[in-house]
Length: 233
Image (cartoon, rainbow, N blue to C red):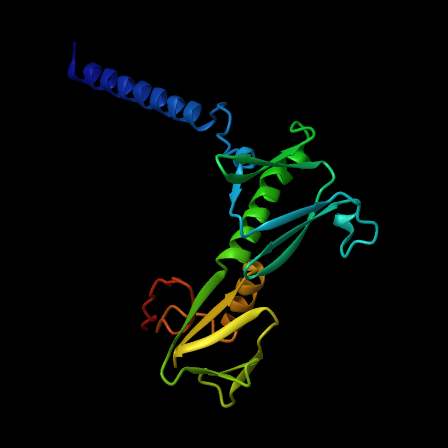
């Protein structure tokens, strides 16, 4: 066999091997195996004796938002306050006791319906957040990174910040949120509603979002930002 023929045969074998590998890769990409779901809605929710839950089965006829129409009401009381959650009419709550501990089981009428399946885990997560809020509460630290950046609480209901502007930034502290400044460049927010606490933290952050070149700004929690180098001509 001539060297030219051997070379062509080798090229053909290499091409066939590459095509085979490519087809295997394509078959692996388009997998038909079902997604693995967390099934968090099926997990029983424990709560202590200092938490009192009351489920009012009376349908809501005048809701604050249209989505809550015909929903029931769940009241959760604890040492740090109270939460009231609307519960969809197809969501069922069952209270149990196991070895002295109180448990709450969440279920839906028909898990095959997409809306009910979606609200199953969501409802369970919202109730878990409310239980944590009325027992332990939520805290969000905020760091002010920058030369001369400072923050103080004035009058108990106003947060005053120096952020490099020609004027002092003043933000009203919402009801239900405790705001302290343990250090001049650190703010601590505390409250029993995780949504309100993080929403207020985001409102503060918008005054000086972190920038990547000098890595200065307002950082919420353990937030970090990748450093960029300035463009050189």
